[in-house]
Image (cartoon, rainbow, N blue to C red; front, side, top):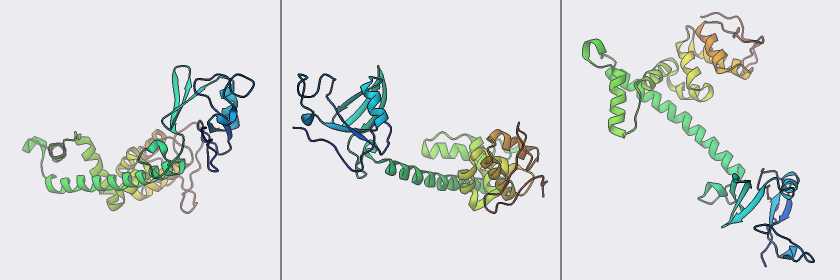
Length: 255
């Protein structure tokens, strides 16, 4: 007899909902239950599905398939999902991790990305300090092209000189906070703040407040470019407040 899966912490195999029914599953379909010429229900494996996904399965809106500890969902020939049936955060296979472990891994990866971008900006700045004297017209090469070539030569990773140049602009503006600014604003807006004709930290605070108020990256970038701080061009009026102190920031010109 196959034992049923009935964990207290079970979540729906299809949508992840914590409120589940236990679905009696017979691989390939077919009758189940005594008196139906099928396998008795207590001999069938059970899998957690929320009420909505359970009902839609019985309406044949999708099909559940299991094997080798994995669950697969299909709609016709299209695979909807793939996941481990039993979750274990100590597993080496991410498909077996809980949603909480996956979220934690994302959070740690974002932190590493922020730190890595800060290191890359510092490296670009150091290349600039080392080779910034070079002028393409006079010396036959530019410092940023030299830096990109060196990184590619020593690592095998293709690096474009524009990436080196942009990171130098960001590091020049924010120094040790470069990685943090890239993390919170994104590379595009961090660069726009670095190039804005105002204090970069003020520009970053304004840009973050504008993003928090629903403005797109393109709208905020245009506001920074044209020095329209607090009056971002869009179809709806913008009331911008600083996230840190809730002070209204609007109509302030460059410093």
